[in-house]
Length: 192
Image 1 (cartoon, rainbow, N blue to C red):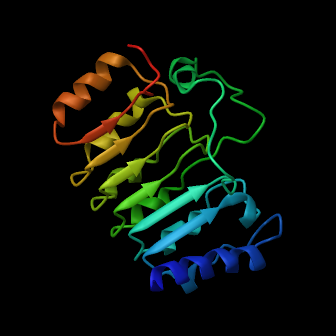
Image 2: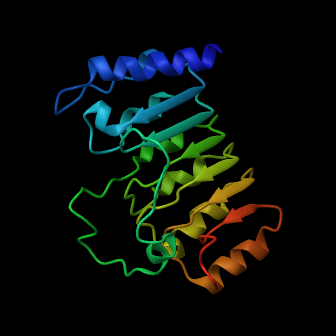
């Protein structure tokens, strides 16, 4: 219950204190919290703040571009995202980057970065040695380039990457290399 209250306080703090176009993302007061939920549009931010590296005690982080309302609906089908060509411009919203400071989160066990238009994981991503659950679905990742970083996560138990560009043969090889990993790389609607 303490974590839920701390998370709600963290989100409320950001709603009240981070409304300028150049928000002060001092997360120092929350560095001992184990759970964090960041909603970028409520922070007044287009990018994932580099100050995320201050959350060194976080075990679970969820980042959303906007606050989810109701049930998610996907149009076009998710399989379209997986087969689309990756040529800029991707859409009118800025492509978000994941700051290199994410690698400082040594206690992080669960990370959700869904539908943020992230086009590349930083090289420091492989430093998340405690990470067990990762969801990077519906981004702009070319998984061919990102698999080497994901291979270096020794405690990973669940990986969801669907809705990103992938090569079927490489995904099957990755899955064969890590048979204990629960690996979701394509939508259930994909007939192949």
